[in-house]
Image 1: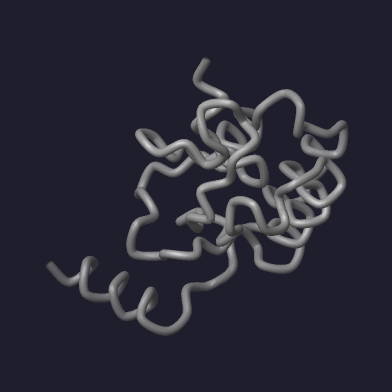
Image 2 (image 1 turned 180 degrees about the vertical axis):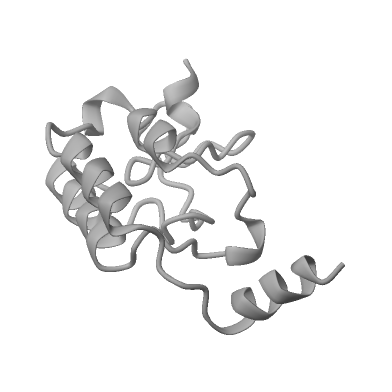
Length: 121
């Protein structure tokens, strides 16, 4: 089952690592490169996952924990829709729509510099 490889908060695949072990009960304590959640700390229940997801979308504007690893073709709606079923919410589509309407925030810091360097090559 592919769900066991996905972050419960943002849906990013952690393959080949298992965020919560083979049995889904033993957290790895690794950190998601996308939303920054530490597996086993904060994503240990549905309500916590929903709270963190809402914060990641509404406050952090889906900023990646490791911006340099963000793929150019990143598809936020597809990633959110890929969250394991047990951790999905009816509000996920609302979050996707709100993110789409707000547009992506401008790049800052090193991400901004990296974007400028790429455009001049």
